[in-house]
Image (cartoon, rainbow, N blue to C red):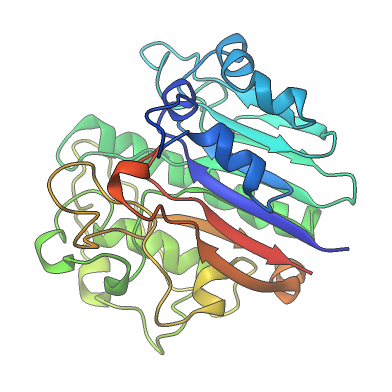
Length: 304
């Protein structure tokens, strides 16, 4: 049985579902047209009740919703993740250790046994405590990925990973190599999870080996991550489109969208079984900037 999964940072579900003009009816209209069976959402930025209200028309049409709002001190109204599915969701779990109520992760099992997760990795900010938080999240998340790959051989984790893995994942990498999202030690995390495909060696290995954690304030874990030569997780878009995987995020500022000055920070990570099933992927990019309902565009993958 085929399965189509979309992943998208909605940049606030209440804003995303608004009808902005006759040419931009918002996310609700997109939900009536998308072939996706499952939509993994990030940055929901709403309580459960608010998300239910915003998505009420979609739920009336048969979609099922689970939401993990951000409830940690200082996080309310920010972050938040959710899953929309055309079939009921089972075995729903929320959060990861030390980030249980941060609205960063939710997982559930579909009717066919496939496990899906929605991830909103902290964006970080170089030179601030937010970057330390991001590194701590990576430390907690990495061993979970190792465990889940064995526990759930048919699993997809889609989301806003907030890290560009390779230089090819952003338009202007040279001017961003000291900014969160493209810091060498963040990219080393991606090497440790996905390996360095399609490169033979990791890009910028000397920077990733620096003993000083880029952008950190107090964080200073010992050891460095190495590229995984036998990964259990695979970046589906990269595997299907090794050299031309599309950008997924464009800032609303300036002419970034029109000039395609984007970042590829949204990823569907799949186990080996699910990668084998992956047939096609695309970014459902709006035709014009005026028709966007988020600063991210949905990343869609068809699994046979």
